[in-house]
Image (cartoon, rainbow, N blue to C red; front, side, top):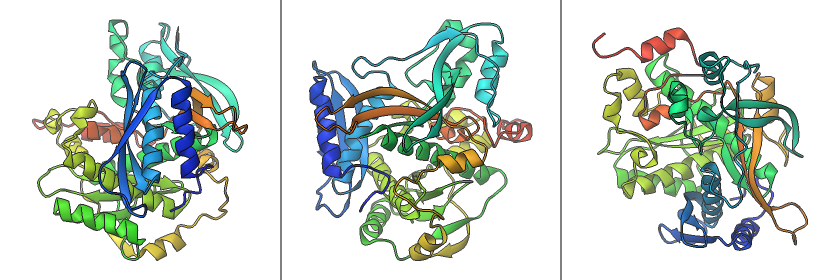
Length: 421
């Protein structure tokens, strides 16, 4: 299946990932979780190591056929970059007084960091406004609290008053691509995707939101993937449209018969077929991780009983099954959610801006292939969009509340109501 949001073929992406590793004396290794006939959904696992064998990044890739391998290789670079481990990578942090936030949307993270230390320095990271992606155009410079945005940074005792913000520091918004444009499209899509997941989790426990189920007529390889997961986990996979305010966001949900916590796959794109494919292939990837015994605790999360004091937060962390008010076929979904102005350079940045969300970005690392002459290689970026919601982090079973567009004092009070109140 083709991905219109990538500028290179799968074969070329594989070559570029390998060339970048060789140029920096790195080693890429990978394995396939099962046989691949080139037409089936697959999961590859990749490891990026330095010259002495130290692991810099590990990742699983999703997709059909070799798309999965390309995804895994680039995500290994992404994970290494998010942790600040790539060769000669610069973190760009400064120690300064954080200026008052002036974003279009309310953002509790920067507001809290500034109000907690209005005249005292803290660690910050710089970003620039992302004005366009094709080609990349940047605008004003801002700084953001490092403890909330830089996954590679961990505050020490000097910032103990800001440590609560670390709960919101995840790899969401980091991406790698063969070009900066490819990486930025992927990163922006992920911000929108996690914002929609946040709204679903919140509406599962407060203010229910009926959704639209997509069922019947799926592409054969995706239908087989759903049936495989259903068979092995003894449950029903439900695919729903969870779009919140822009683009198209799809969630594939299944609760294993032997688990209190559901597995979810998310997909976002301007194009509904790409969003659907990403959601299904990610659910397949999550099944493979679940079958291997991987849990959120392995990714820095806690066990669900860490939220026992907060019943609503625990229920949200378990990812309740979606409720749908309508249902239609895959073909109906593609027709109803088709973009108004599709193009090869389409992305969600413009619609985000129209909805009042500014997007900011920074380049973390890049290697370009000199022989290519087109600036292609491996580019690792990070984007943030103050105001887009990050409540999805509750899936790591650490107490947190909405901090962006879904924030309200009443919602926070309800979520934090304890069992003894």
